[in-house]
Picture 1 (cartoon, rainbow, N blue to C red):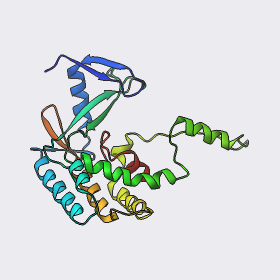
Picture 2 (picture 1 turned 180 degrees about the vertical axis):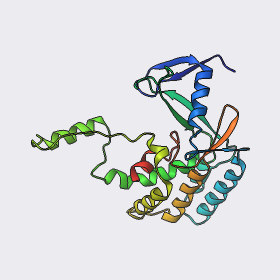
Picture 3 (picture 1 turned 180 degrees about the horizontal axis):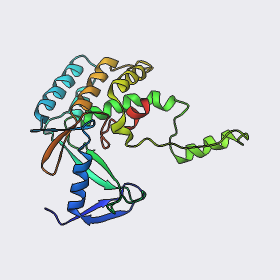
Length: 234
């Protein structure tokens, strides 16, 4: 086993150096959440590759995507994702003296990386039209300026959802995605085909951690290209 782990902090741009066994121990603790994760005997990425390739060929043959798009999203030579563990150094340490962790799955090179990006892009139009949408800090400051002075019985507040991406319930998110995609002004790719792609992404998020093989059963992975707009749609 490696002796030291050198990882970026979850926020703030810092670097964390700690015993590697601490990262492994806390990563395995996160994977005990059976609502979100499940262990599998061996990766099924080969089957996922075949499903993705068949769907992309069908969409190309129907004229929904070009050959160039199909090749770009191709799942050939794909591998399972890899889970990483980052420390939330902006949070108070736990009773064991370690800071809380955030786990994410690197989707680079996975069978569904390309199609995840396509679905996320198609969800963007609706998300960015919502009154609640905030592009960045500058956009937020502009909205505050437009708001002007608050009345005496008005106040600003913030709220946070713990582990938002993994917490999104897929059944409800599916309903929200369908409404989102049906509202598009231009539907070169039909809604149902995009829903099939989204299901391939969500149902086949397999990854490895310390020699073990796992699959995410709920929500979407922190690290997947199907992330922000999926969560915002829900």
